[in-house]
Image 1 (cartoon, helix red, strand yellow):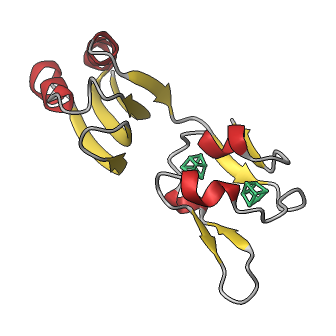
Image 2 (cartoon, rainbow, N blue to C red; image 1 turned 90 degrees about the vertical axis):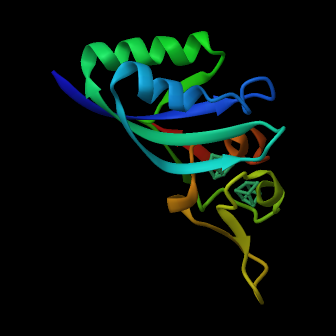
Length: 136
Ligand code: SF4
Ligand code: SF4
């Protein structure tokens, strides 16, 4: 059975420079499409990709990624903002790796662009009034 699944890969300093993704494609007969990536050499990073292939190959590929030291998260969740709770404190702006938050000129309000979010959950944990919420 063929499957197409979106996953989030969390890279660490130890795994970021290794050719792990190319090994996944070469050895497990999977196609991939990188949807978003936020990676800097020598730092931690995140990548969202869609993997397509036979279920058996997909399962083996996921085991390979885990054995290589990557943390993997299924992208069956989303991060939304509860605008009633947001105080526009700005704490989320600098921590978001994909710059999903911006400060609006004039009003100084913090705008949130969900299309840039890669569901890393950093803002969910850090938002003082818990305005950022994880939805499944
Ligand atoms: S950290 Fe929370 S309260 Fe502060 S601007 Fe961001 S979403 Fe709003
Ligand atoms: S979960 Fe929050 S910090 Fe992470 S990418 Fe999405 S908006 Fe940015």
